[in-house]
Image (cartoon, rainbow over all chains, first blue to last red; front, side, top):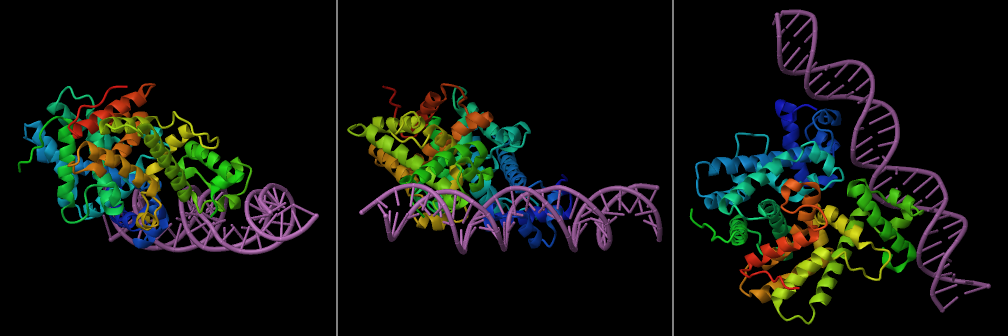
Length: 217
Length: 217
DNA sequence: ACATTTTTGATAGTAATACTGTCTTTTTGC
DNA sequence: GCAAAAAGACAGTATTACTATCAAAAATGT
């Protein structure tokens, strides 16, 4: 398998895979449709991705790497772990506001795809094999880095990993619920959804950690 | 579509669909394989279920109905909403311990299926249509009933629906993580996993609600 | 500038999937 | 015992998820 980020065709594949995953959903997405959309062939896509599962995995890993990067640069040089955690939450929710100098990845659509389809990347029968092969490294590494901020706030907190992973799972889930199953969420769609979500996540996380949320900034 | 619970074949289909979803995973599961497993034909299965998506939806709804029923009967006559919430958490986690007089549904395996595949029932492209058609009623109703317990504890709590839905999502997620992606969870596999999970969920939920968890019982 | 290598496209082909249709046999309910 | 419903036995189709082969185009090194 060759790295899609190394060639023009590869980038085109990535760009339109995001758009098509969003438009069709994971189940209806096929390499044939993608090939048609980019005026290429199935075979050429198979040269970059074994199948659509690995394509989704690639996209979701890219997304979590991006979130991790944002959290890292925006909390660098900040000492107070509570402020660091608040920044992590803000960046997680607003990740798609900032744009890397990268034309072929539309983060806004990618975020939608990760919200809707992201869980399918690891809710698979071969999860143990793929985990052994390191395919979930990005997400695990992000979860770990936030769990370390949590431990800076309370070194004795016994559930740092679960609180961290739940923060990410909950963030995407609650957006999905707000948009599609509003009876499952207390936040509602609209232009304030991101701010409301940040408030709620901060409320939950800081309550669990016995701290008052940092509302400054 | 006929009700599978009304006929012997229907029950056999349900029984073995659970086993096969567990053994093969949602993606590799096919009606052909199921037909072979029960010595019947694809066509006969299609008389009960439109496709495997609706089959999964049926199973997951059955599961959530069962959890809701357990919570209801076990918290009936209890006044203290904090104890009720604790009982809800216990029943949610230990739902598969109790067995309804129902031979064709193995709750233990069904729980595994709901943990691994449950999210795929509503992470679909047609979520809005299916929601309109009432296909997610069971889960929404369960989430609502627990959100009402939360509001009994704190009538001013602004995030009762999200806390409730997150409780259920988190419970299944954290079991999945503990078993397959241990770096994403603070609880670990083993015979204490359910008790550990109950402790953690209680800790989270009662902290968020500013209450001490009820450890009695 | 030209030969070489790499990448892409064109085309074909296969096994499996996700169904639908029709007809016969079996089961069941009265 | 008979009518109706349910199940089985086929057969068939469009699509999916690939793999294989070979030619054309593009990039690369010298």
